[in-house]
Amino acid sequence: MADGFSPMGSAAPYPVSEADRAAIAAAIDGEELVQLALNLGNIPSPAGHEKAAGDFVYDWMKLEGFSPRRVGATPERSNIIGTYGGKGAGPTAGKNLLFTAHLDTESPTWNPDLDAYKFRPETLDNPEWNTCWLEDGVFYGYPIANDRGPMSCFLMAAKALKRAGIELAGKMYLTACPGEIGPEPIEEHRGIAYMGKDIGAHYLFHHGGVAPDYAIAAEGCDFGLTWIGSGYAVFRIRLLGEGVFTPLLTHPENVADHPNPIYRLGGLMTALNAWGRQYEIEHRYECQGGVSAPKAQVASVRGGVPYAFGAGTEVVNVYLEVGMTPRQTAASIQHELEALMVAQNLGEVEIETVVVRNGFEADASAVAPLVGAVDAATRLTFGRPVERAAPVFSSMWRDQNVFNMQRIPAITTGFKRWRPTPKDMVDSALIYALTALAVCGKAEPAGATSRPAPVYGDNPFG
Image (cartoon, rainbow, N blue to C red; front, side, top):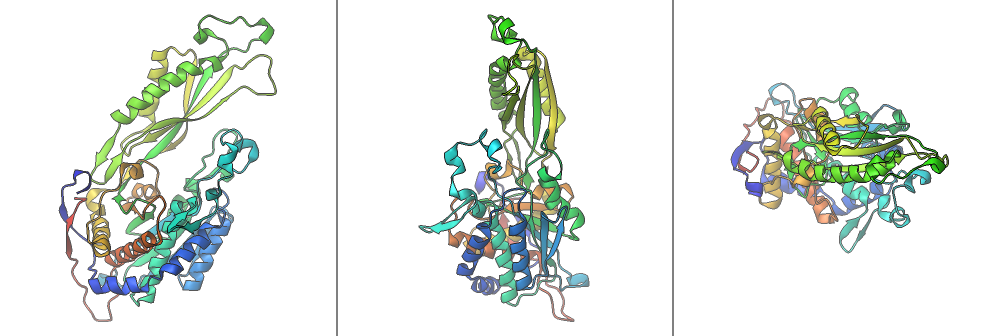
C-alpha cells in the first residue's frame, strides 16, 4: 500500500459492475477525447482572460445536451455549469457529484513591463504556455496538464455515460471555472481584474445553483487521490531605513548599519532561508488523506524608484509566500516571522499579511463513500486499488479546498500530471465515469427498488 496505508473496506454508495465498465469503456472515443483536449487547450486562457475557453466549453455542453449555464462575477470571467442525470426521486434519488476544473493556466502576465522583471526572454518564448500538441505519444503544453486535460476527461466521461444509455439517479455537475491559478490583489494591483479564487469555484458554490453531496477537483495526481489541500499566505516584510543624499553618505563598516534598508536584504535572505528549511520540517502534516509539506519562498522584492535616484530609499518590501497545512493559521506563522526578525537584529521591520488562503481537509468518515467510489473505479480500470497521491499534490492549493471549506466532502484526483498519454486520458475519463455511476447510481425504472451498496474490498484510505 502507498505510504504505509492500513487497508480498510469502504463502500461506494452504489454498485458498479464489470458490464457497466465495458459499456462505458466502449462509449469513450479516444480520438474524440484527444481532439477535445487539444481544441480546448489551444485556446489562450491566462488568468483574467478565460472567456474564450469558457465559451468553448459552454458551446460543447450545449451541443452535447448538458444544459449549460454561465454564472460569473463578470461577463468576461464566468463559471460554466452543465448537468447530467438527476433522474432519481425519493429513496432512489442518488447522490449528487460535482466535477470541477479550472480554465486558466499558469503563464506570464503578458504585460512586457512586468514580465521583464520576472522572466528570461527564452522563458517567455516557450510555446507551451498557450499551445498544446501530441508528439511521440505524449502531450505537450501546460494547458493540457493544468487543467484542461482533466476537464476534457470528465466532460467525455459524462458523454460516455449518456452514449452508453446509463441514466444517473443523482445529478452529475460539470463545472469549468476561472481564476484557480490566481492572481491575488496585492498593493496597487487591486480590484476585480486581479481576483482569482474568489470568482471561480468559490463564487460558483455560492451563486451557481449547485447542491453537491460530494465534489472532485479534476487535476493531475498521477491517478492518486487526496482529500486534503494546502493553503498559503503572503507576508510583506518591510525593512525601514533612512534616505541619505548620496554625496553626503558615509559607508558604515557593518552593512547592517547602512541607512539604506536595501543593504540589509542579505541578512534577511540568509535568515529566511534557514527559517524556511526548518519550517517545512516542523509543520509537515500527515493524515489518512494525504501529506502537506508546506514550503516558503520569496516571491518579490521592491524598493526605491529607479528613475528617482539620488538618496537611496527608506523602504524595501519583501513578499514571502508561505504554504499552510490545513491545521495552520496565518497568525501563527506571523508570530514566527516576527520572532525571527527580532532574533536576527534586522533593524526596524514591519510584517503584514497581504493574502491569506487557509487549507482544508475532508472529514475522513464523510468522504469515505466518495473514496470508495474512486477505489472501485480504479480497480475496474487498472485492477488495483487507488493509492494516496504524492505529497506534492496535497501540498498546494486545489479547488477541493472550496468544497471542504463548505462541508462538502471533496477530493482531487486525475491522470498523470506531466507528459500524459492519450491512454492516460482515456483511463481517466473511464475512472471519472465509473466514479459518477458509483456515487450517483443508476436511475431505476418506475416501481423498482434500489440495490444495496456493496463493499469493494481493501481501500487503502482507511
